[in-house]
Amino acid sequence: MSSSRPVLKTTLRARSTPDTKFFVDFDWWEKSDLDIKTYLYTRLPIKEEETTLDMERELIDLVDSQTGQVRQVDGFQYVVQTYFSQLPKDFMLHTSMVDAIFCVLLAHANEPMTARELAKQVKKPVDVVLKTIGGSRIYQGIRPVSDDI
Image 1 (cartoon, rainbow, N blue to C red):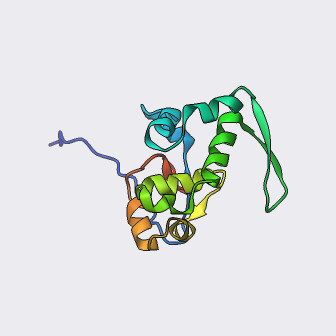
Image 2 (cartoon, rainbow, N blue to C red; image 1 turned 90 degrees about the vertical axis):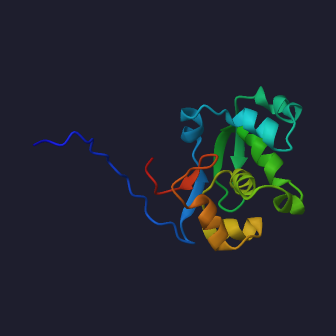
């Protein structure tokens, strides 16, 4: 007798550790029904007019201060990175942890950062950071580097 129950595939994610690196997956934003620019304008203290000035330039050269490597980014990414790298020190204390982690990653040009590094930046215990972004649910595109979604 055959079973009429469907077979469900499960995908197992590797357990996140303090050394797991995270980044903002922009493909997640593209696939979702959310728009990253709208999110930034409505949820965070960034004003649309602060981004429109440099948006007209197609590509801007950014120099990595640690390696000296030059890479090109679009005007929006440049303005966002510049904006988040200049936030007041107490900003992280007055926003949600997900927003704080999101801002930290964008301020660092979305270079993957470990949960330990993120915890230090947002001034929270690493286990709290891992419970927030290390689970199966993806918040604002923040996911582990090795995760294949």
